[in-house]
Amino acid sequence: MSHQSRHSSPAKTSRLAILSSVLLLASCGTAAAPSPSAHVAESHEVATAAPEASADPLAVCDGVEPEGEPLEIAVGTASYSFDPRMIEGPIHCQPFVIVFTNSDPAMADNPAGTNEHNVTIRFENLIGPLLFDGEVIGQTTIRYEVPGLPAGEHYMYCKLHPPMTGRILVAAAGS
Image (cartoon, rainbow, N blue to C red; front, side):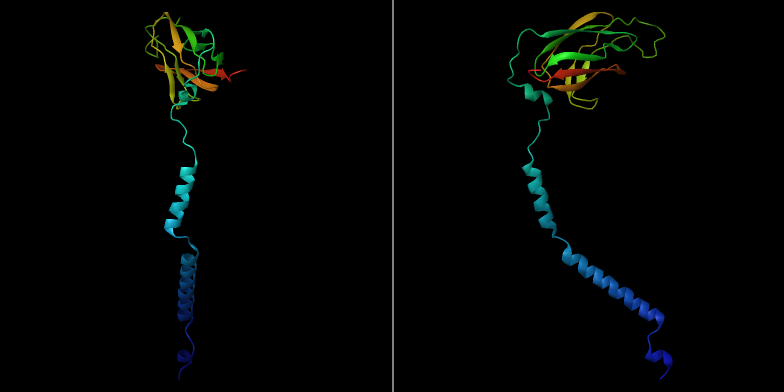
């Protein structure tokens, strides 16, 4: 008998070791893994346990009665920006009025293309749900009757000039 026939070659031993390792890992992996149906059931329970949030942030103001006359806030324009840029005063779910004056003059060489502006309000940030979309006006004044907004800080901008931004801080009721 030759020396090679009594002993395995190094290549054959290596192949057997790799095959054994693969089989061992495969059997361990399947024994420990949860069944797909158990995972689906667990995630379904978690999903149904959480209360659904309303897609309309104004829904929290449904049924809230206004207290007194609406607050009036003056907002103007100054070189394609709001003045003031931060509005404070509105109270949670209480309607208010923005007296908006667009004083930006029409200019032939205006890179923005128009001197028309409006006030658009979104919940918390630019991509939040739309809360109010005021009429676009030229160089004049308009009264925007804004419905009661939920407490918090909301995003205000001109829809024709999105870099023209501001914030509206709505106080909690009783503050």
